[in-house]
Image 1 (cartoon, rainbow, N blue to C red):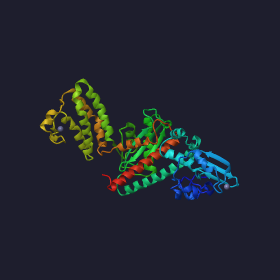
Image 2: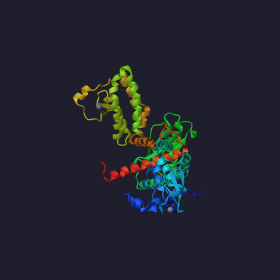
Image 3: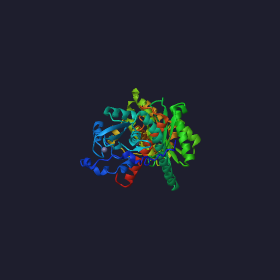
Image 4: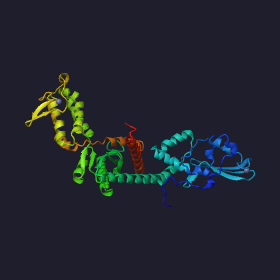
Length: 453
Ligand SMILES: [Zn+2]
Ligand SMILES: [Zn+2]
């Protein structure tokens, strides 16, 4: 088989014989768009030519009389090929002609190529569209033809487009880097089903400055022992690829606090600053605070949880990159919850970072008692050794939130309730990435022009 030409613009046949039918002037008077159908060769080259749903019985009325001499047609052969219908006829005067509902492309009716493309590129599935079409009795290519077009034409087109897109993206990052700006990424995995029985894991790397996805690794369950192992393997492979194959110099990467990712960063990528997403850490703190506050004597803590999480968040945001500042801000909380806003520590005067409280506020708050059980429980959570150590990886206030937005957008192309073959997962992930990158790029362009806020 010849090498596939993957460009979508050159796939159309210019075989004039396929499109010899044109409306006679008498018939075209009823059409307001007669000028647009006067040039069949133009139509053939335009994939975006308008398509109409036509009833077969109405279509066949056009083939009762010869288009050349007007006498009755006495021999007619109708061929149906998926969505394409072809009519060949001979009239009583022995005129012979043929007509097809669409031009041919790659040896098939053009629409038999475009229908699978429209299905795949919009993220829907053949099954869904087939069901819709069956109800309407609309003629589509058969399932086998759909899959054949998908693997022979559509996947190569996607791979090519994605490759070109990624190359440009990496080049652009290299340029930015050459200007002395840091390359900062975030990374996270998405499993194709909730829980630990997933079949695939997709690890994506996103550029923090633009929210574009610059790389992904797709792993099958057969490549690792669990979803956690799949995630860390995807992370390792992806980072190696970006550093050593693409040649990127990555300054920082933000992830969740997954122990396996931390270990990989510590052991294999010491040159990259590993930052934690404050939202994931805040969620972890809340997970500890809630059960503590649910204990009978600890109810006073319940009203504090929201403020504590906010305080953590703002401490990370306001520390100006300093671990010392962040630690001081975060731990000042233990004084504040007891109603103490100025205190002495190691002979130094310290105070809360908030504005002075009004007397009303001071009276209304349910301050905790410093020697109570609930305070001791809170103290253990706030001063947790691991958490305090992790603060040094929270000072840059880098988020992985936009990656979660991308994971949600992936559902358009990869609904979790469906299982896809590896090749399909790969192609659909690439579509989702190009969709995401095109849209975040557009948002930025619009913002840069000042049209939006
Ligand atoms: Zn005739
Ligand atoms: Zn205070």
